[in-house]
Length: 375
Ligand SMILES: Cc1cc2nc3c(=O)[nH]c(=O)nc-3n(C[C@H](O)[C@H](O)[C@H](O)COP(=O)(O)OP(=O)(O)OC[C@H]3O[C@@H](n4cnc5c(N)ncnc54)[C@H](O)[C@@H]3O)c2cc1C
Image 1 (cartoon, rainbow, N blue to C red):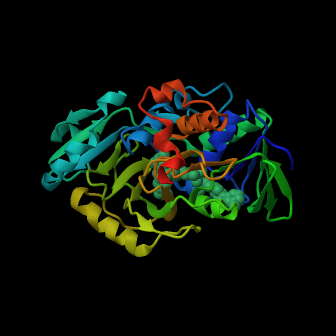
Image 2 (cartoon, helix red, strand yellow):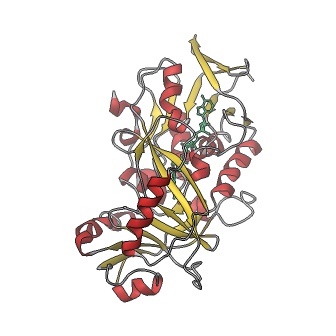
Image 3 (tube, helix red, strand yellow):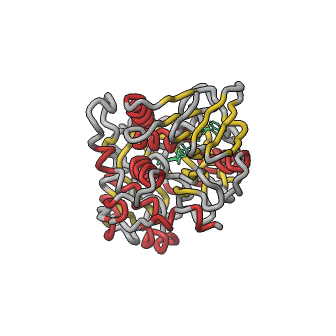
C-alpha cells in the first residue's frame, strides 16, 4: 500500500465518515487494527440521534448531520438511517433546576423542545412513577440511528469513490522524511502519505505518540449498557428514550426490549472495555426510584469507551506542531449522531478549506475544534 493523499487510522464512525467525504476529492486509504469495522466504541453505542445532547460544538455538528442522515445519497443504505423516537427528559422535585438547563441554547439551533405536563409524560411512558415525576421536557425530533447501516454506508461510499480500506492493519511506527510519512503496519507492510488522519478513538493519543506528536490529553471514559425485558404485557416499541435530568441513567426501546445505561463515566485506559456487574446493579436500583420496570434478568450487557478532549469538544484539524498530522478525535458520546457534520468538516479542513458554510452558520468555528487550543 503506497502513495495516498491521506491515510486515515481507524475505521470507526469517525474514520469512516471522513473517508466517505474525502475520497471523492483525494486518494484515501483507511487502516483498521481489528478484523471487523466497528468493533470498538462505534459498535457499542445506544444509537440515539438527539441534537440536544452534547455541548455547543457537538450540537452544531449533530444538527448539521441531519440532512445527510435523513436523505443520504441513493444506494447508501438499505433502510432509513434515522427513525422517529423522541426523547423525554424527566425530573424529580430536586432536579427541576437541572431540567431547566436541558433546553438552554436549543432554540438558536432550531431544536424543537416541548414542555409536557406530567400527564402527557405518563402517557408517553406509562412506566414512569407519578410520585417521582415532577416535570418533563420532550424533544420530539430525536431519532433512533441504524448505526450499522450508517457505518457500512460510509465505508461503501468511500470504496465507491476509490478508497482503499484494510482490516487487520495496525499502524505501529511512523517516520516523517521530506514531507512524507512512512507508516509501518503490524504485519510489516508500509504505507506512504503526506497526511495522516488520526481517527483512532480511545487510542488517538497513543497513535500521536507513535508519530512523535504531543498527545492532547484525551480521556477514555467507560460507559455501560444492558438489555432487559419490558414490563410484562407492555408494548414499549413506541416509548420515547427517557433520560434522567441529571443523566443518572437513561433507557430506550431496543427491538421490543429496553436498552438501559447508568450513563457512567469511569476513567479507563484505551482497551477492549467490558461491563461491570456492580455498575449494572447500582443502575437498576437508581432507576427503580423513577420507573416501575421490574428487572428479572440482564439479557446482555456491554461497555464502550467514550473519549473526550479536556473541554469535551471534538478535536478536528491539523496539529500545529507536526506537519501532515491531522486530528479527528474526542467524539465523546456523540460521534455517531454528529458523524456526517464531523466527516464533512474534517474533509474540508484536511483539504485546507474553511468549515463548511452550513456548519459555520450553526456557530461552529475552526478554532473551537482545532488541536491548537491545547498548545
Ligand atoms: C454505551 C455507549 C453509548 C453511546 N451512545 C451514543 C449515542 O446514542 N449516539 C452517539 O452519537 N454516540 C454514542 N456513543 C458514542 C459513540 O459511540 C462514539 O462517539 C463513536 O463511536 C466514536 O467513534 P470513533 O470512530 O472515534 O471510535 P471507534 O469506533 O472506537 O474507532 C476507532 C478505531 O480505531 C482503531 N485503531 C486504534 N488504534 C489503531 C491503530 N494504531 N491502527 C489502526 N487502527 C487503530 C480501533 O481499533 C477502532 O476500531 C455511545 C458510546 C457508548 C460506549
